[in-house]
Structure formats: structure tokens, C-alpha cells
Length: 408
Image (cartoon, rainbow, N blue to C red; front, side, top):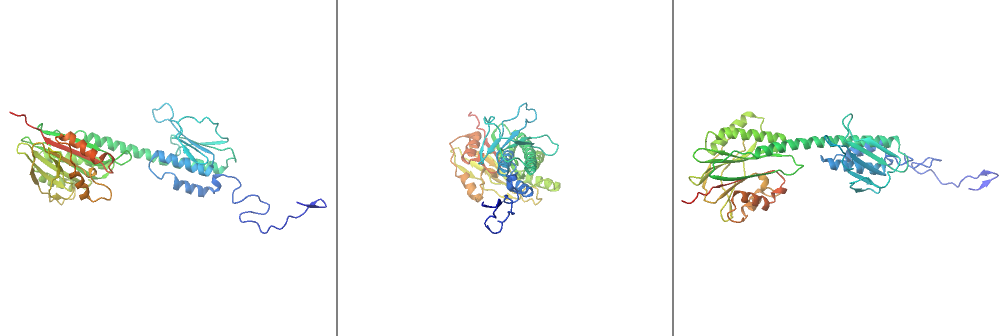
């Protein structure tokens, strides 16, 4: 800038100030420093609400917290989990993410020194026990009050979602253990019948359902086979499943025909009003006569695998689900040959998203298994062939075969 008589000459006319810039002010926008991602605190908190806790998965929530803070504060952000109840040491840091924002799993303390200055806040809600700590660090510029507030509120938001995720996981675990305990201890059929039962939950993060199976010993060497599915998922469905199972045992003890057992059970449940509807399939196996009598309450038909491994779906009338109070159940009887294996199952075994149920059942009927597998082999082979371990719903399977009589 040229001087005239010791006085600085005026600068050339550069026109009006640029938007967001005052004369004599070197700042652009509302903030001079890179705090909170150069966004006002209310807008940054709105973004945190939208971006943190999008799922009920604890690990995903932690990653969302790290990504959000890295983007809005810059530098490095690390989450240190606290020891769980009964644990003596803390797990390794879950995730550390630094500019330019590429996530890297952390299994040991990083050898490089932590940038200074740093901010550390508890991963906690109000006065609850902290779930860990969140530390942000950057060399420059210095942290502002708004940066501290953003870090504290984002960590509090994430802790609330993590707490909800853990409570849901505990509920799922309780329901799963309850259902497994119930399904794992069915009644015992007569010794003249071989059985094999399998139960597969849909997945570790999927709410448990109300799928179940049961066997009831009847008079004159007969056995009643049962498979059912309470509508819905979660602990309530598992509790209702237990109620259906208990009621069925009481009704079946009267030795009524299968269709009359369903009628009585439907009336009992309809009077309660608090129970969820359920589908149910009953099969009374009479080894002495070589027959099986079926009755269905809204359930899918069973399959019969012949000794040569070929399959056939049983054609039988289907009444309404239990709990409607409508009734209308009819029996169907067919021969059960020597070496035939009955397969009762819930819809999770065959149903696939976007696929017609007739196509799903045809896939089961089209299976060709190795000959003479028996109930254990048929159950395992069908589960594997239909990829039931990755099904979208719970799967319950009950296979049964009349035990071969020793030759005279």
C-alpha cells in the first residue's frame, strides 16, 4: 500500500463487502474457528438426533457417534467402553476414527501420541453408571464452549440409545431361553414312535417368536403330535405359546379326536381374550392300525417322506386359527406305511419373502432325500436343503416314524 506524506493511501475501491463479511472483519460466515463443524449448535444437535441411534444395535450406535463427532469436531475421536458388571478390565477401544474420516478398528492403544488439547466426556445418561468415555482430540484450533456442549450432548444421546438396545437384548435373551426351555422338553410319545424335534430362532437380533411343538401319549399305543405358531414375536408370544401348550395337554388328555381337540382349545382361548391367535396342526398316530389322523387350525400341511426319500404333502381341510371362536375343524385320515416319516413344521421353514406359498411348499415336496434316513436324518436334511438356518422367521420342525417291529 503506497504512502503519501506518512499517511497510508486508501486502497483501491474493491466494491461492496462480500456476503457474510463485514468491512474490516477477516471472518467468513458466522464462526471464525472450526468449532462444531462451523454449524450453529442447535443445527448440529438436530443432525445428531437424526444420525445417532438409527438402529437398535449397540455397535452401530457407537460407530454412528464416532462418525458424527469426527465430522463435526475434526481430529480424532475414540470411544473407550467401561467394564461390564462383574468384569475387572475394560474391553479394547471399540473404534477410533481420525481425519480424513476412515474408520479403523482399535485392538490396542495407538502408538502415536494423542493430539492435544483433548475433551473427554462420559458415555452416560444423567446419573446412571457410565457405559464408557468418549475422547475427542485435535491440535488446532482450540475447542469452544459449543464444541464441549456438542460432545457432551451427542455422547448422552448415544448412551440413551445404547441403554435401550441393551434392554431389548435382555428381553430377547429371556424370551429365547424361555422358548428353548419349553421346546426342548416336549412330552414323550409311546416307545413305538421315533421322533426328532428342532427349533431354530431367526437370528440373534430378531425378536423370538411363538413357534413350538409337542407330543402327547394317548391310550392304546397312540401318540398325538403337535406343532403350532403363535402370531407375533417377543416375550409375549413366548408366554402365550406356553399357555397354548398347557391348555393343549389338558384337552388332549381327554383322548378326543384331533378335530374335537382343536374345537375345545379354540373355545377356551377365545373366552380368554388376552391370548394371541395361533395356528396349530395335530396328528394322531396309531401304529397298531398304521394310520394318521390330521386336523389343522390355519396351519400349513405336513409332509410324508417315503422310505425311498421322496416327499408328498398331505391334503387336508384347514380351519381358522385358534382363538377366533369360530370353530369348523374337520379330520382327515390316511395310511402311514412302514418306514414313512411324518414332517410337521412351522411356516418359517418354507416361506420366503415375495414368494407365493404354493411355490414354497412345492420346493419342500420336490426334495429327494437319501433313503431310510429316519426322523433325525430327515429333520436335519430338510433344514439344510431349505437353508433354514438363514430363514427370516423362527422354524420349528417335528419328525416322527413308527418304530419297526422286530421280526418274529
